[in-house]
Length: 205
Image 1 (cartoon, rainbow, N blue to C red):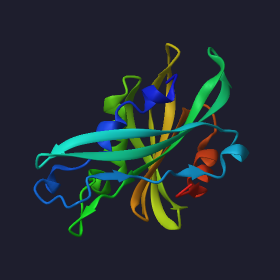
Image 2 (image 1 turned 45 degrees about the vertical axis):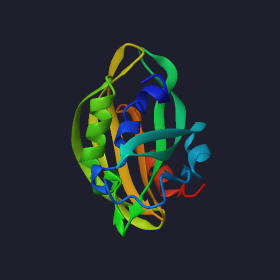
Image 3 (image 1 turned 90 degrees about the vertical axis):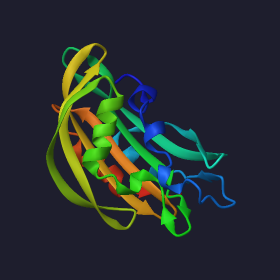
């Protein structure tokens, strides 16, 4: 898990249109999410690495439909034996448009629970494996009572396999779905920092 691009490599295909909108497209052929960030990164010791667009294009009813998702990624340098100090803490906020057509929402993320979201992360990133649910709790994210699920798994950092914790939560806010997640080595106590950053999410940022 050495770069945010590798960590997020599977998300462009995940944050895309569902097939149900075929044949009922109106004049709107593109949707762009508003970015989400967190106001608690500095106090938690995380640094914003950047906000990037993940653009997905699909063909529906003979038309090209474009969806622009926004990903803000934060990293934190942590020190553990064997690896020394490295960017081992990762937190991200992902916003993806709800895409409402004829009073129906077509972005599949709206139907994904946290197990589905973390499963997508695991299947699309070769360094994460053996993910299993540990617990869940409610956190107020963007004004909504949101279930945040904690998972345990394994991840590869600089060739070393480590036990990690993964936290995932999703909320609908205004015209977007916002997904937050954090990943860090289990032996380091970053849970409160990750949850505080989720609770301090801002959208649009």
